[in-house]
Length: 98
Image 1 (cartoon, rainbow, N blue to C red):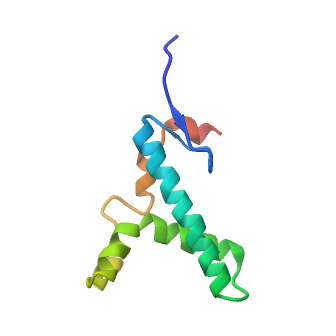
Image 2: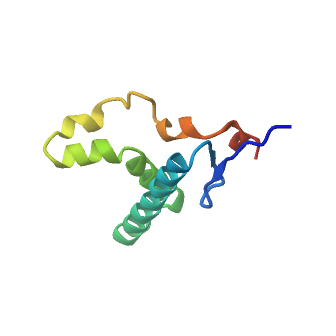
């Protein structure tokens, strides 16, 4: 039986083939959580699930959001070349079995 090293993200249980991808995913989830908190503090009465979805969307699209803030707002309306779930491509199949 072969031994396969995987890295597991504490925040959501996603598993990765390498440490770099796992750390990047964890940073994205931390950003999403902080954006969610900002939204909930700023918009009275917003549904918690909606604010979490917005936070996750903005964290996943952080590169496009940064470009938009630097003067290229049209990039936010472009489709993400690798799909909305781009960060999930590096998740190992083990995560799907949980």
